Image (cartoon, rainbow, N blue to C red):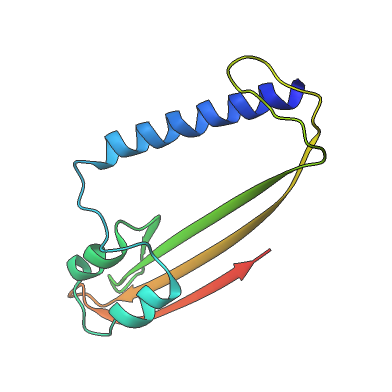
Length: 134
């Protein structure tokens, strides 16, 4: 039953986070699609304006400015997955308690870091990206 309570708690938390994120993001302009390496390769080009970059990638996680007045934007994207596996045929009833089924699982994470360098006129002069999976 302990695993069912944990599963219920995690499910409720995920629903709350998703609901809060949807409500707070609804007034902002969303990126064209989910940010991937393909998105960067396909859409980000030298000479783009910072506004065009925001249309494709959304708002950056970090912005820095050097002594010459050039900005650097950093995007850190993290994707986590957890796959639960049951070790026996018992069924976990989230609303009414649980069974003696033991759950185990595996998790994986992928990260994508994008760095975009702008000149003083807010035009892209260089960009790079790095992806990891573990």
